[in-house]
Every structure is written in C-alpha cells, then in structure tokens.
Length: 287
Ligand code: CAA
Ligand code: NAD
Image 1: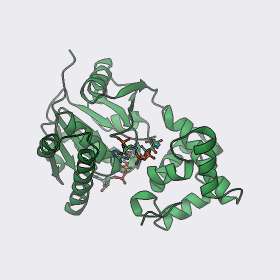
Image 2: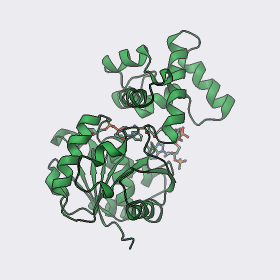
Image 3: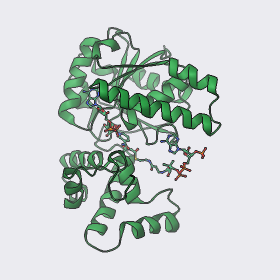
Image 4: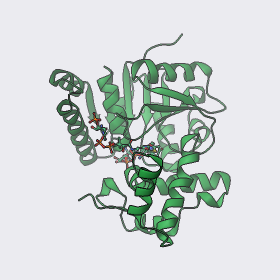
C-alpha cells in the first residue's frame, strides 16, 4: 500500500537541502532540517526565509501561505530529532565517507519501520549508502535539481536492494505531493542527467583553462547558440565548484574515463575557496 509522507526530515540545509525543505513545507509537510551547527542552521533558515519572501514578492505565494510554510519548518542540530520522520532526505556534502557514516547513524535514529531513507547525492552509488543500514530495501536516491523550487525533475535511483514499494512511494511523494516529474535511473554514478551534464561542464572548464575562449564567450555561445538558460561556467558556479569536483571524482572512480577527470583549474579554484555562487566567487563574481 502506498502511504503518504507527512513528516519529512532533511539533512543538510544548504542550497539543495534548503530547496527540498522549502518545496516540502509549501506542499503541506511538516519538515525538520538537520544541520551541523547552530550557525549553519541559522544560515540555512535565513536563506529559506528569503526564498519564501521572494516567492511572495513574485506573486507565487500569498503571505498566509508563506507564514503557514514557515510554521511547518523546524531546524535542529540533533540527528535524533528525526526519529519520528516517515522519510528523510540526506543532502549533505558530496562525500562518500561522510554520507555512509551518516546513513549508519540515521538507521539507528529513525523509529518508523516503514520510513524511507533517501539521498540527494549527485553521483555516489546508492548501494554504498544502503549497505550502511539494516534496511537497504528502504534506501534509494531521490535526486532533485538546482534550483529545487524551479526545476521539475526528480531522478529516482533504486539500488539492487531497493524494494519496488519504496520506489513507488518515493515516486508518489515526488509527483503527487511535491508536483515534480520523475525519471528512473540505474544505480550507476551520475545516474542519467549528471552522466551527460558533467563531462560537458568539465569540457567547458578545459576550454577556459587552455585559453581557447573566455568564460563569458563560452557561456554566450551556449546561451545564444543552443538556447540553454545559462552557459556551462555560470552553471558550474551555480552547482558549486566543490560539488562539481566531488561529482567528477566519484564518476572517474566509477568509470575510469578521462573525460571525468576534474581539470587542474577546477581543483585549484576549490583549493583557493572559490566555490562559485555560494562562496561569492567562482568563474564570475557574485559579491
Ligand atoms: N529559488 C526559487 N526561484 C528561483 C530561484 C531560486 N533559487 N532562482 C530563480 N528562480 C525563479 C525566479 O524567481 C524566476 O521566476 P519567474 O519566472 O516567476 O519570475 C525564474 O526562476 C527565472 O529566474 P530569473 O529570471 O532570476 O533568472 P533566469 O531566467 O536566468 O533563471 C534559472 C534562473 C532558473 C537558474 C535558470 O537560469 C536555469 O534554469 N538554469 C539552469 C539550471 C540547471 O541546469 N540546473 C541543473 C543543475 S545540475 C543539478 O542540479 C544536478 C546535480 O546533481 C549537480
Ligand atoms: P551545500 O554545500 O550548499 O550544502 C551542504 C550542507 O550540508 C551545508 O549547509 C553543511 O553545513 C551541511 N552538512 C554537512 N555535513 C552535515 C551533517 N553531517 N549533518 C547535517 N548537515 C551537514 O551543498 P548542496 O549544493 O546543497 O549539495 C548537497 C548534496 O546535494 C550533495 O550530495 C550534492 O551532490 C547534491 N546535489 C547538488 C546539486 C547542486 O546543484 N548543488 C544538485 C543536485 C544534487
């Protein structure tokens, strides 16, 4: 039987976790966001409140709907507060070791035996996360796209051990409750979209690195020449250069394909703290 999700947990209140929490609360769910520190929780809350206010300004939400969504959003730094959730979506940094450790802890915390434990990972195989738990049949990838309130897609990624019931419940959650569209992908690093998108973004970075064209011209080429909403360098900045590098590393580990090797320029920028839009500077300046 497909049961509705009423109480959602989101781990990580960054760009993606914040976006997932926002669409969840706007859809009427009770949402708890778990962050690493009070400071990170405060920053996540501020971003979320700003986004909800922006939606009001744009006429997409009434003030009463914003207030109701805010009342449904709670923040914590204690993982154990997620004990009563029907579904938890992990959206912490793209780091296999951190995520695996977190799934092992989460498994001990969530008391509902039917709860779904999902990851928003961009590239880490779901089986690795599932096998850290005692309920791998209830673990799957539920991969949202950035910015979450705008982009309609959710990739559903069952591992070899995920039950069909879990996939159906996650699909109903994404479509009927959040109003998203889904596609299914096999449990291979990068799934469908990033397997196509990431080599393109890395190629654009190599073009700039090699002095072939400026970041502005590469972007202008793809916006005006191919009608993309934004060019690959601006999109890399939006994704986060640290996240893009982590995705490239995990896809390279999976396939050994040189097209997935993070170019030295990307590595140097991440090492220099230039993480793109979220840090204020990447290929472009956002200050
Ligand atoms: N939250 C909520 N709404 C937002 C938003 C955000 N963060 N950013 C933009 N919007 C809304 C704006 O309010 C605006 O709404 P209206 O049309 O109602 O006015 C609309 O989106 C368009 O925004 P803008 O006019 O400011 O700017 P734009 O037309 O350039 O659109 C964009 C911005 C939506 C980001 C668009 O450029 C776009 O879709 N870019 C491509 C994004 C993309 O490819 N994302 C996928 C990344 S890969 C990924 O997510 C997977 C992974 O694992 C890495
Ligand atoms: P982000 O850096 O904006 O946010 C990550 C957040 O997780 C931070 O606020 C951090 O404080 C928090 N965090 C780290 N460890 C934690 C822990 N143990 N417990 C609680 N919170 C913790 O990153 P993001 O862009 O939101 O990406 C998050 C995940 O979503 C990654 O797996 C990424 O690959 C995936 N993803 C990213 C995008 C994108 O475009 N950025 C798109 C789809 C999926």
